[in-house]
Length: 162
Image 1 (cartoon, helix red, strand yellow):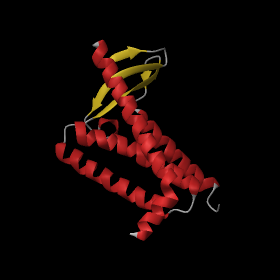
Image 2: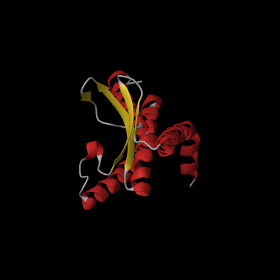
Image 3: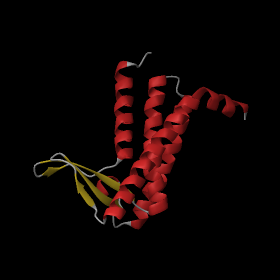
Image 4: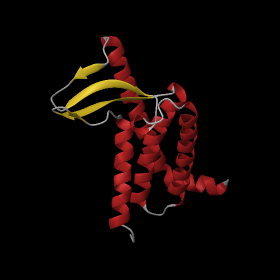
């Protein structure tokens, strides 16, 4: 028990990062859902590059396994295990930049996992496009996870021995 207390004391700032990223994601999703509910629409044209479109992703990444309930729940459980693995990695790592990266990934993953458990779907709403090309619709958690992964890769390349 003392080891756990010591690890939490050493890593409190990274736990704060996880909480802030999770709450940022939850706040953005709640705001967008409430916005669309009060305006009676599921899309909002912002500019020629960005729209907000509320889509409930009942599948996994990119909507795969959308109609396969068993696979969806199996992957949801797998995501939970990955989050646990990342938490252990965070607590064992001695590299601060790596810990920041992992904390971002955990916070974002928790945001989407929360939605899968509570709503059986993840609300995606950011639609980037150029002319007729549309990138997939995503949310704040997806951005946070992507930034965390990018920072983790960069830390591995440039800060390996630091």
